[in-house]
Image (cartoon, rainbow, N blue to C red; front, top):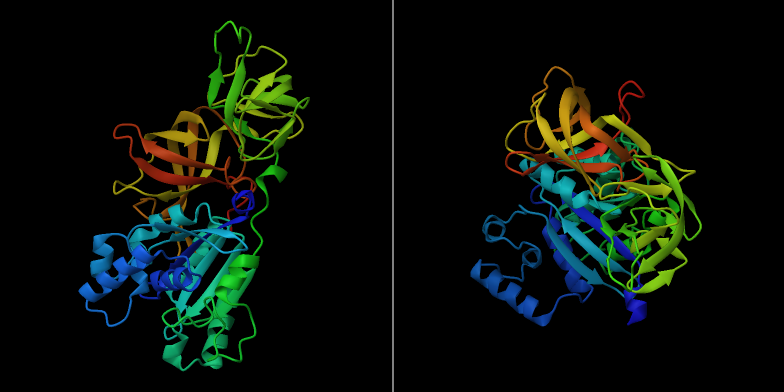
Length: 429
């Protein structure tokens, strides 16, 4: 049992244009890897018959909303879990429609790998570029281009190689690394879990074999120490009369007893006296462990502060440059005040300027239209009410990300990635 719990976890997202077969691919992956329970399969069989399908519609394994099943499309982000003897997986099945770009950003934000589907009949389309851009934007480590529905083009090697050639140019433009190309048929299972006899010309891995061997993103514990304080523990009891500890989850890095640390934003220094976890003491804690840290000095530390190693400080400032995906039906408003939630901290921020919006389909920057609507991605500048402790998103996805919240309705209106300002470097993928 312990070996199962210790298995490596790979998070991946699927994306593609409408009707490229994302849900069918995931259904086939679950079915052929024997990750579907009997009652689930029976429910899918019943739903397939009700919808008039002659065969089992494996897409229904992931299409959870009634509206999705009726329309045959993915609307919301559907998360699914499965495991093989080699690895555990969490899948985020994201929508293909342009109006659900925000859902794809949400689903892909924690992914190690992106599977981008292409219909072999249609080749590279605008949505392919859109999803590839988002994969690049979110710094997803590897991309698998799944050329689906090969059965409908006679399993043609020429068609596959043409699509591969076109996408290679896009990958280079977006600086996508570790791109893998797989020809498959999700409906029939060709090259999904089992190797296809219909494409003897393809000598690469099946999709599942690839997912089982792809490297997981760089371990969080290799990054600089970032410990956002979530709660100050002061029991005020006879047993723990002088106990003072700072609880939270280690966002990145590893910290050990005796380390010299700095508390931000005060820049006061101390050393780690002890690390506690569930009633036991540790010599070292690794991200993403949840622990309590005790220091050798009694300092003024509260929720939202950050404990870091003194030799690797993050940026601290009130002028923040952000790439934001707008999630709300109300457009972004220059000069408006929003709540910024960043790690365990919460501050107010005012949007000072919109530098440009991104035309994801053409990969160009739009500078003459500063109205940021739902699903738009824009480079903005914000001024915060007090300093944030942050890293660039490219360096640390935890401390480099934030969300914007409407202070009146408390709706989450934007998902942001902290980037270099235009003065430091013009943004490029």
